[in-house]
Image (cartoon, rainbow, N blue to C red):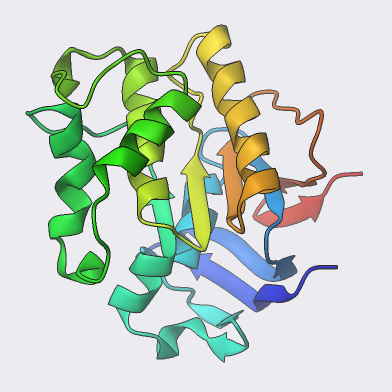
Length: 221
């Protein structure tokens, strides 16, 4: 078992107005592991992921991160270490390099330095036949999704939260993303939590498989 990174103790989440999404979650997550979270649309997968970087805060219970209540850390510390990628890739007007540089302008990442040569290495890693000068808005959805992943990895996160990264992709691009996620686990110290409502399998990497159903999180065997 890897060193424990997160502990959930009786964690519940309710939307304003009282609608219950998750109830009494108890869970341990180790460092440098891959977690797959399955469930139907609306089951609470995105909410679950967003608890890790405090886009949502639990109403009851406690989430421990490195042994401390996650609410004791500043938001900047959490968002620097734990990066969330939404389903729809977001790109801004400008070049691929403009997009990869964009998060480095935020205060939370002021200690990070953009490295163009490293960015080009990531473009090759994700098999993107584009240059840093190409216009980002003209890229396909699959290319934009990989640009979003590269942007996150350039920030060297400890935890990567992937919210259905293959939902808008064709089968070939979806498989490519899954293969690269597997490779990341073997070549880096990043911990990956990935939500999906479709079939996902990782042939060469061990992972823990969960399903959110009826407000509970169950580990699948």
